[in-house]
Length: 227
Ligand code: HEM
Image (tube, rainbow, N blue to C red; front, side):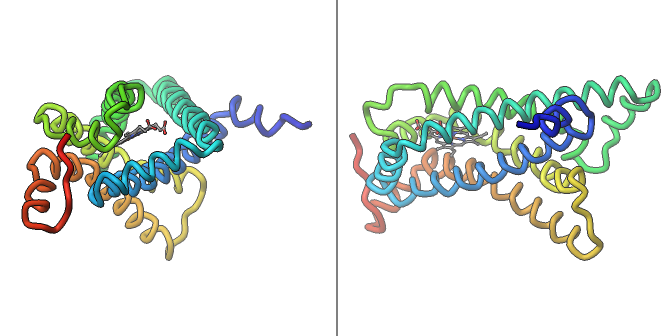
């Protein structure tokens, strides 16, 4: 087997940037799928828990989880590596100015939003993934969101994610050399749409904090089972 290609991805600067770009795009795709999954919360307990049961009983799911972990790791490692490299290679004083004066808030804050997303992700894993699932995921998630501090963390995390993707998505296409006078504006608009969609995570948590599900049930639109 020829490992030259894989070796080049790790040992060259352009290779590391490509890994960062591709893993970033795939993670953006995961975020959209995860958002769609969580919108099922709005359909009620049976729909959400039914989907989770289906997912967890699928033998392919553990492999997808390992793939996801590898994607996050590859993105974080290459992201830090590329940043350190850019900093070391930049003329004195240039890098500091560039970071402060990026063209958009998204590009100027990439490092900070990346750190915030990582902290948010670790919190999310502790509270939802590696937590007590005995009450069922629907009850676990919706009960958690009724606490103001919990939802505040989700709003801040979603804002960081939206800001990160507002620059990250289009920048990834640029890194991969996908630039075209006709399609680049479309790619930029698509990237901004994906970024905007990330505020959906905050909306879901607000929906439960404000008790909109309970009001909808009272009005007879949906059914809520309080345990
Ligand atoms: C409304 C907001 C969200 C809700 C309700 C939610 C819900 C969940 C739940 C219940 C799980 C555990 C599933 C299981 O145990 O099998 C999970 C896993 C996960 N979530 Fe979220 N999530 C939200 C937002 C996010 C965000 C913003 C991110 C990324 C920054 C994220 C990344 C992940 C990852 C990586 C996993 C692990 C995947 C897996 O092991 O299946 N989630 N989420």
